[in-house]
Image (cartoon, rainbow, N blue to C red):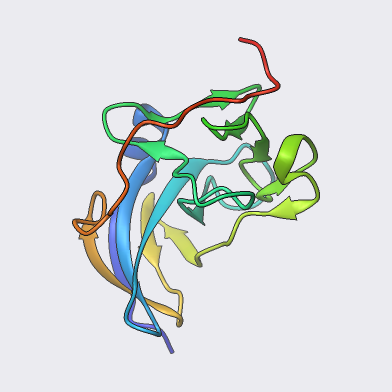
Length: 143
């Protein structure tokens, strides 16, 4: 059974739009994870690895957070959009893929990490992120 770790509260995720944290996976690697609001029938927030499925492009950027369009997460590089509740993409270069999920639960307004495959390291981004440059955009979306 996973070690349960309190991450933040639901209100913080809803107010800020997203919440970033870093975990260590079973192989010892660091992964950034984003909590995002979910307006579906399940939990009020969902957790996804902070990477587009098309290319290793961060979805949450320092100083910007996650960009949303019509309730979907927007990849800043190619403009593919992912459903915040299911992680599924039905457009752009990442079409027919789903973001990698990280298991969390919500109790009494608090969000807990309960995923057996990862362990909590820190709130915020990974300190060893080798490529933190802003993405060049080839997006098919217009804002």
